[in-house]
Length: 574
Image (cartoon, rainbow, N blue to C red):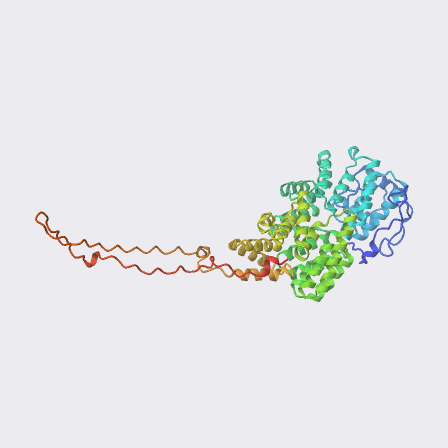
């Protein structure tokens, strides 16, 4: 297996363009500046005839879309035998298979396409490749400034060759860009346009899967995943299928499929992504030791699998290896500055009583969200999660209602909106959204916890107990702040009484006591007259006919269901 040297991420950054000028909006005329070290440190020689022919051939096929594009290198018939592929060739081979390229190879591909379009400014496929490479780099490095460069390159590609005239890969690139910016409706429109014109173009289905998932359309996402599996066999299809099973709560199927993908993966970046998926599945099952092992394996396989740093930090928290967890989170934020990692680290600090450090991370989160917004990235979901638990719940509700209006109705948005409404004092309204998130089938301890707390607030104690139990059973350490509160809320509800749910109802009231019969009234005696007969005396009442004395009624026995449990502060917990 050809593994790239373990480089610092800074050495893999794509070449930085020089300041823009009107004649070169993409800054593509700037000399090709290569990273300082690694496999791409030496400038490439001038293009050979073979390279020129290969690049021309690429223009006749689909531009390499790194999320799902296809690049085909044409053999020129030379009989020199197989050669060791360079970083550009490895990146092209990865995208041809629909797999991720390593960050170092991705850097080389970006530099190669920048150099090429410098002298071929109307090469639509190369511009599409460059634009989509920028999308992938921004997504995997959290450098959102590259999204603007991606948009410019993709638009220039469409100017050189419209999508209606065969440049579908530029449209796919725009769909990938829209997904990365969390604009799932736009991604759906671009993707469905391509699918309508080229229904057998497999490269469009991954972006459609992401768009449908973001919109909460499970039926369409399932159909797109199945179609992708028909058109593109192998590890990419297995990976997408595992993600589908995971989102539907089919844990065993997701695990089996993810393991098969990991076993069949051959390239380092592809293997590392598969191992990272196994780590996430282990974490969600509440198996932190297994999760750490998988995340470590992913990082050993490809140091550019930076998301595994944050995954490893979560699992270390669950193992009470706090110092290591703090170091892992700090490393993740340095190399992959995503706002959700700042939120997680802030909550870890808060759980340790380090409120000042927590506030510092929350301030960083706000800065990251604001910077992303300038680059067209909508981070409303993570900002709303922060506001609901640590800021202004009403602001969180407003943000999430905006997401819902954009048809962003996946499980994550439904859960966050339900919880924000509860935190804003609107638990009855929030219940609908929290139930919707759990009903998707996804096995998420946080979703179950939120629903259980809301139901408890509404005095629906049976379902509340069931969902709180599900949360602590699914992953007992799902959050350093919320997991202890979930257990407290469950303890406050108490244990089920002997006999099961039937004994939870109040006992029937005792039958009413019979009322005593009134005493017979005695008629005054009348004197017998000549024309009247004396009345015969009434017979003495027998003991058996005596009126029963009322028995004292017993007070109704108290029932566990009739008593409201002691309220914990869980309803105001994260």
